[in-house]
Amino acid sequence: MIAKALNLSIPHLREGYLTGELRPADLVAAIRSRIGGPVPGPVWIHVLSDPELAPYLERLAASEPDSLPLYGIPFAIKDNIDLAGIPTTAACPAFAYVPGPSAPVVERLIAAGAIPIGKTNLDQFATGLVGIRSPHGATPNAFDPSYISGGSSSGSAVAVALGLVSFALGTDTAGSGRVPAAFNNLVGIKPTRGLISTSGVVPACRTLDCVSLFALDVADAEAVMAVAAHFDGSDPYARKAGPWAKGGGAGDGPFRFGVPDSLQFFGDRESERLFEGAVERLRDLGGEPVGLDFAPFAEAARLLYEGPWVAERYATIEGFIEREPESLLEVTRRIIAPAAEARAVDAFKAQYRLADLKRQADGAMAGLDCVLVPTAPTIYRIAEVESDPIALNNRLGTYTNFMNLLDLAAVAVPGGFRSDGLPFGVTLFGPAFIDAALARLADRLHRAQDLPLGATGRPLLSTRRSGAPAATLNPSSPEPGRLNLVVCGAHLSGLPLNHQLTGRGGRLIRATRTAPRYRLYALPGGPPERPGLIRQPEGGEAIEVEVWSLPLDQVGGFLAGIPAPLGLGSVELSDGTSEKGFICEGFAVQGALDITRLGGWRAYAGQPGC
Image (cartoon, rainbow, N blue to C red; front, side):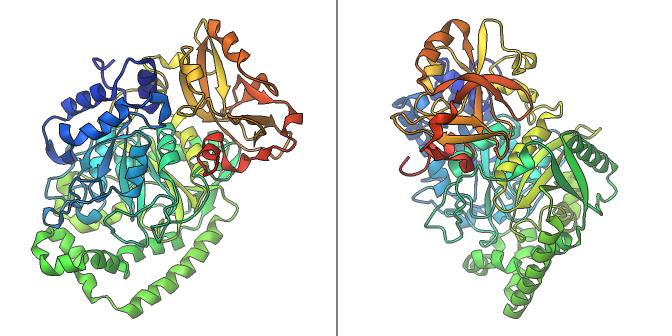
């Protein structure tokens, strides 16, 4: 399995682990061989050595692959996020420190079985959207090294795009988790502020910072978010919002999306053309475009660097910058140092103005499911940015800088390729805590295009099964001798009964959702606890499910173990197709717990006491 080109999609790796064809130690060795060297160029700042990796691999060797949701999944960490025992530098060697514990988000991922491969390069102190403000060198674009990769989470994005890790952590204050996604053909999740803990993160603007996530597709991103999004009581900026899979109707069925009434591309006709194409694709998916007054968003964006929020960046490193100003890159110092003169009265005035702008922005979004914008208006060569480092950087934040100030959730998604071969991306955004609905719609938009995954050259659908041609992934066309089955409870990947599928030669086809016409219940009895999926004539929601392929000669034995009131029926999926799956007789939900609002069994099973 390792001898072939690496396919690091989460379902593919899980299949390899469950069948015994793959071991985490072999995968890590193959990845490190591809990376090469202890500090190989500007993508990485620190790659873990054999002794540093040993504790993670030893733990997995003593665990069963189906016992951990992210068993053996390799990931990268932006080097402003703590990993126990590994220096955190924020791309400033003089600032480096060695943390004791990992950041809580990193701890959760490792506890779920994920393997940290290394710490990635970034714009120094996460100050920039370009990916070239680092003493370790400019991180080159994954498609053309003469172009910027985007920042500040440059190394994390490129590591995913090149297929060196399955996913990567970044941070996002002004767009650092979205601009690199657009420039490297990735999905970038900028969650609602506080949804993922920012403890153990070197702050940029502490009141605005988010831990962000890069992945090749939405399905992998959602699998990681199900682990990462967890309330951290030790983080004063954490917010309780229930499971990450919460949201409205933008992800399934008809929807209304805002399109700014005035867009600026700085003369880039390629970006303008591709954005128009994204609008048409959303229209084809059932969306109604609605003109949006963009003025309050644009003014809020200008506040981030033209207003007093730069003083937050100064506050983070005040002692260090006063002690060792020469340790900062000149461009970083030019941006942060003047904030020492900021006045408190200006900070209050800016907060008052921001409150006015938020009220206007909320009004502009009223009645919309989401808003579509270009992730960045254009892209530049590294040499261009080096000759005009601040003005060109600021242009890249045109459609990103306002989002954390206005408390919005966002998902960046690939939007096609320019004629010069560089990727273009768009972003879907909306009010806080509609993250899951945005992800569902982003997934539909991504899959409506014939695009490769990152810079790997593999098509999007090919990651759902190892080596399978895309044509066999049509849910209505299972392979000869096999049956597709929809599961929604403890048979999901990583949950207690998943071995009943994998042990019978089951293969995961895709993670998806039902059509928004179902309710989900936790039935009385157990263990194990069982779900009841009931179709509704009206008032239902989309529920997380997985489609598995099972050999026909194994179906009978599998079904024999499914007790009443569950039975086999047709389940309608979010793309309008139907598959055989487990449904529940209506009488059985009397006295059952309605868990529809959680979006799926995985979120319910992850709650304390469940």
